Amino acid sequence: MTPRLKAVSLFSGCGGLDLGIEDAGFEMALGTDSDPWAAKSHQANFPGSKFFTGSIEDFSQERAAETAGQDLKDIDLLVGGPPCPPFSKSRFYRTEMPRAMEDPVGEVTINGYLRTLSWLLPRAFLLENVAGMAFNVHRPTLDYIKSTAEGLGYTCEWRVLNAADFGVPQIRQRFFLVGIRDGSFSWPEPTHVDPKKEADGLLPWATAGEAISDLDTEENANDAGHVAGGKYNHLLRQIPPGDNYLFFTKERGHPSPEFGWRKRYWSFLLKLSPDLPSWTIQARRSNNMGPLHWRSRILRIDEVKRLQTFPDDWHLEGTIERQWRQIGNAVPPRLALALGSQLRDALAIREDDLSRVA
Image 1 (cartoon, helix red, strand yellow):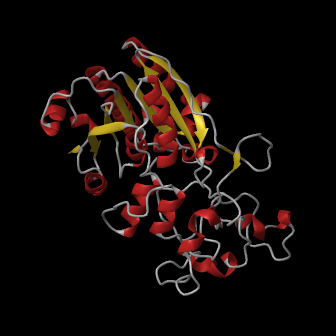
Image 2 (image 1 turned 135 degrees about the horizontal axis):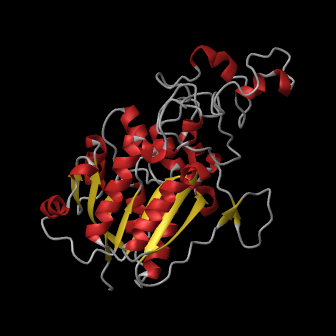
Image 3 (image 1 turned 180 degrees about the vertical axis):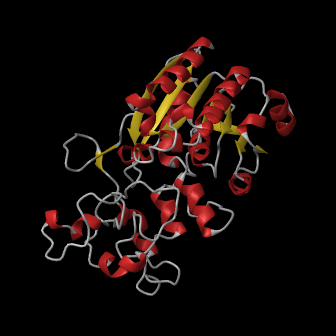
């Protein structure tokens, strides 16, 4: 059997990106994260991988070698998604907060990734972030990342991909930047398509109902602790599946409007439809910010894992809120597998066992 290529992961979280990369034929040699709960989850799910728990500022070549128990030579791939808030849409509304690399979090994490790239010098790298990384307002950061990597000998290209186009039952737009030192990279071709569009040979988007309906029963539909909507629970129950608070607006023709037009976040009282993919799973568990279950309750962790294409037995440490944050921050493993397979091909390795991805 051809030896598996070796990868190092930064900002690993509970391992969504790493799972897809591993199932594409890579061996995860080392992971890193500053969240101790995510670190415990990752170590449980990747028992053969070493893990550094701490800030990216403290992750040096010497510290990496000490953690791994060996010098990290001949690493094929570096992957990771620096924390996304500095590049998110929310910064358009939170104008009092700095954005991109003017935010200390953005400056430290982006430079931490690039610094690791400069001493590790893998054959290829993959950097993930929210789609907002591609916005014109963030172009100086994107240009800085590209120029730094190109100065290290990498040929770079980027693209925004929708996870739903690759079989994930969730509309989730994410930015990916790929750099390769020797060879050429081809982006994965979509396998699924919005059913409103016509495309020969492609399957329709996977739906939330297909992913999680078997986990729900009448008996557990309103478990204590999962009631959603707060003081608006009575309104939430009237909102049709696939709709949000705009259902209760004058502009939508409601006879008793409760909310002003576009006066709330779009995800406020947002309900899943079993006939559509989920909307983006957020990193924060909320009782009134969706997507919420079509039964007017907060989603459960096992359902969120399914919507992100994690295996049912994927181990998560910490409270429900901490588990949710780990899953919500993750790259869907099925999308990561599509990217990892293309990276594997670019680095000339044969396909390996893909059985772990849900």
